[in-house]
Image 1 (tube, rainbow, N blue to C red):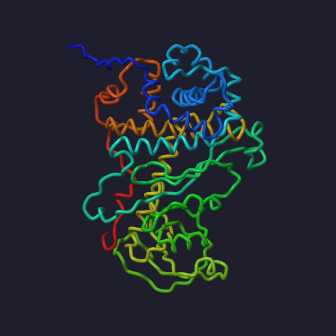
Image 2 (cartoon, rainbow, N blue to C red):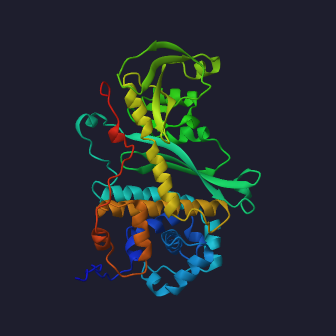
Amino acid sequence: MKKQHKHKPAGHRYTTLKQLCNLIPGHMVSSLAQKHGVDIQSRTYTPWSHVVSLLYAHFSHALGLNDVCDALQMNAAALSTIRGAVPPSRNNLSHANKIRNADMAEELYWCMMKHLMDTVPGFAKGKVRRGYLRRFSKTIHALDSTTIQLVANCMDWAKHRRRKAAAKCHLRLDLQSFLPRCAIIDTAKHHDSTMTQSLCAELKPGEIAVFDKAYNKFKHLFELTVRGVWWVGRAKDNMQYKVVRTLETTGHKRILRDEVIEMVVEASKKAYPCELRRVVALVEINGKDVEIAFITNHLEWSAWTVAELYRCRWDIEVFFKDIKQTLQLSDFLGYSANAVRWQIWMGLLVHLLMRCLAFMHGWEHSFKRQFTVVRAVLWRRWNLPALLDSYGTAKPPGRIRGAPEQAYLPGFV
């Protein structure tokens, strides 16, 4: 029997970790540290060393301060080649997470997104649509939040129940590029509707927002309508309304009702004085057909378009699943609100770097598989692009996903 030859990745002068960190421009961290006053708070442990330590914590899925500090200390020589980064002591890393302004981490994420979009042609531009779908020229956004469980007896600032503590990541996701456009890290005690206005502040006329019933705040929905922003959401079960007229925009058998409505309750009518549209469709959930009511301010789309647009919202759940299953968002390196923000923003930055690598090298497997491959070779001197280009012997199976490119347009069923 002939022995199968396995291809060994090409060597590289730098470690995989350094190749990843080199995606961040050398001047960016230092300039942001100066802007946010972080450089004043650092002596031997520089802001760049702090950023590299937290990136390593996510890439290696480190279980705590000792895990990060010991590993970096044992690889201090290789670490020093990453623009002079130094391994932290347990006290240094803990103090930096607690004291240094986490706004720097947030701004670093958005600066890196802009940098990658400018330097990598096509990254975050969205997929090319075909046929009639080219008429959907505006961006489609999904709004949602995810809860990140914390340790209740250590994090009093994050308590939202008697024996539970949690942080919340409120997100607006661009469904074409699958990248965040707005993110807010806060405690879990605030309802999602309180963040709606901040998440939608930068939406432009003609763009589309998709969200669940937690974001149904009629006053804000009317503001979006006035601004020319289209939106699709779930109707609350106790919503009181009257039917003004019925519409016949499609003959799709799964559309049960398509109505133009007005609010009945005085407070709701005052908050949203215009007509709304209510579409009831049969949606398959866990193998069973369930009636779900949607509301929207667009009166001309086909009713099935409305249902399909809402189905696309599932992509934001996929995004949350990706970051929670791969990044280190279960064991935190600090108990303060500032430390939690540092770790979450650095995790989002890791996700951004990996997504860019996947785009640049045509990675066709899942995000989770890419992450595990990179994690396994962090200290190897292998050529990372060559590894990603050649990894795997079989093409991955096709994925069926509710994407905005599958949405229907007016008159098409």
